[in-house]
Amino acid sequence: MKEFFSKLLNGMSIGIVVALIPNALLGELLKLAIPHVPVLQAVYDTTVFVMSLLPVLIGVMVGISFKLTPIQTASVGIAAMVGSGAIQKTADGLFALQGIGIVINTGITAALAVLFVRFIGDRLKAYSILLLPTLSILVPGMIGLILLPYIKGGTGLIGEAIAGMTTWQPIIMGALLAVIFCFIILSPISTVGVATVISLAGIGSGAANLGIVAAGIGLAIASYKANSLGTALAHVLGSPKIQMRNFFMKPRIALPMFLTAAALGALAGLLKIEGTPYSAGFGLSGFVGPLNYMQLADGGWTAANITIMVAVFFFLPFVLNVILLYLFTKKWNWIKSGDYKLHFD
Image 1 (spheres, rainbow, N blue to C red):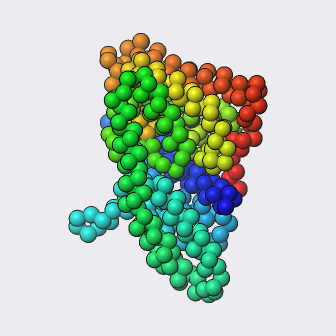
Image 2 (cartoon, helix red, strand yellow; image 1 turned 30 degrees about the vertical axis):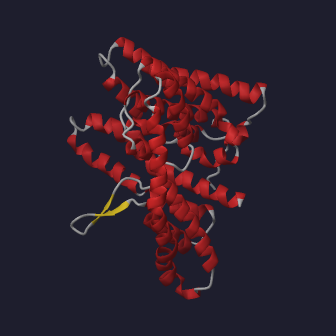
Image 3 (cartoon, rainbow, N blue to C red; image 1 turned 45 degrees about the horizontal axis):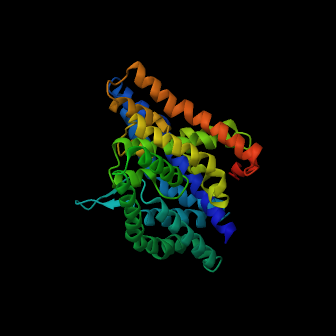
């Protein structure tokens, strides 16, 4: 069971990062450039479209993680897309891709599809290519589609609970929201989905974003020795979800990031770091968080605001994580560099 869960999370992590990195790297920069270079709109639209392919990529990467055959892997990809909720039927009878779907339901559907194709095995013999994709839609795909409203409702309840915190004292609320979003970004739940469902804005959004910043920078530093520089940077420029498998196998590896998130979230309440429902779900990906703070801060791009932005989004997350990682790895021996090793084979 542990091995199954590990492979599932590993495949999901890779699929998430591959699908989201193009827009994370280019999205905000392209938005700034498009008014001056309109032809770049096509590039931006393409990165958004690729994000909507996330369910298929999760299914395919999960299939590869389980070393399934090409037909089985493609069938898992199809089933994951069906159960994701990313496909919506429009009023005129056409179909459209809407967002990235419900990631946790995509993962559940992919897991069911793996179990299904393993159960079928070689029973279909030469008819596999004809029947397996269809059966994967009819069985795990449809089960995922049936589960979708309930899983989506559960995500909504989480969102409502988080929304209630925004009425609390700003510093306490900021610390808790940052830690919660630091956790969510390491889980199959979509931070963007939760933030947009509850329209998380203002200081709550800023705190949530800083929780993701804490996770991204901390995991990049922690994983550098165990992985390549490019993989380490993917935690910041892409998504910390790349560590989802390792986090669920050894939750303690995120303790330094949780503590950093709490400190940064409290600062969000103290310094009035604000954001939008969209920016709440991102960390430093595409510089969404810092840019939105600068746009919403009183006075805009003043020297004081730039100083606060650099300190809170870059300097402090780095320093706090370095100190805490030193304590957890060198002084207390609770964590090892190898705990952050990513396996892409």
